[in-house]
Image 1 (cartoon, rainbow, N blue to C red):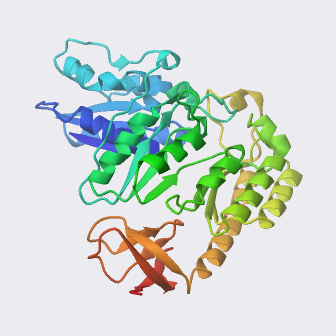
Image 2 (cartoon, rainbow, N blue to C red):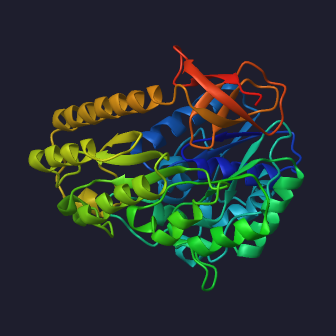
Length: 418
């Protein structure tokens, strides 16, 4: 059996769940699972090419498409001669049984998919990472209730659903027992986390009290989710000073047409609050450039705003029409050359800012955790990749940043034994 994963970190976590579920599956066929992404149309094209390549390489390969693409682009895979089975996100919990029934030809349906909005259970379980890993992802939430105008994901994953604080506490304690030193709390929209009256801040406070894992890191947050209460959690050194902001735009008009729940005012306040309360944090963000309602003036004002706030890097995504979303039929896309031009400007700005911040790390001390045991590359609490001169240490090691690695974006370190 093989699993190939496309898309986000949450998909990679889900692939671990699939691997665990199918661990007892036995077949003469080579089962190949493609855990698909649906964020862009390009993702679908890549997955279909992969399915074709796999199927042509051996007639013994049995190709199964699951994940977000299987849920929202069913027809594209259903009509492909290179795909044997399509299982939507809504039915992944029964994936093993569905595959077995299909192999025995007891189920002649090529597509197994039910209404994702009627799926109340969250697809999750405790997943044990491989023995050489020092870090682990932990899903705390799935689905999304926002329905932003550019986004297909709510239709792929359904309404927001959260795991209980007790399950998450127990999971982290199990990870501690397996010598994991960092847990990354992930989900589609972790700011939506809700277990009874407990929101994201309450969950973090609870985990800081009931677990002892040295490092806790969060994935994407929206500006309005970076609250005073959340920032107060970061006064605990176990919270990694690293923020990834799902920003998308800084312009109020564009944000409104995107159906985001905040304006430029909240964007600027988030930058200011991080700079004030977690001043040494690594701040990354996602930006969509060339949204149909973004004028040249809007773009220029956004550039000006970004230049005047503290952050570390940007992931820049040129807007592309996504069938099935509100913006796809509501707005006419901008000229593609203009979109590319704006993306190039922001990417240049991001690279300049990243290198500026990177150089400032020289001469500082950091705690590094190797990505893998017996590997020389690791990650600092504030999200800098660091190349170390040795690989024979466990847990965190305090190092002195002596320079920059010329071949990668990593920092170079010397050990500090004081």
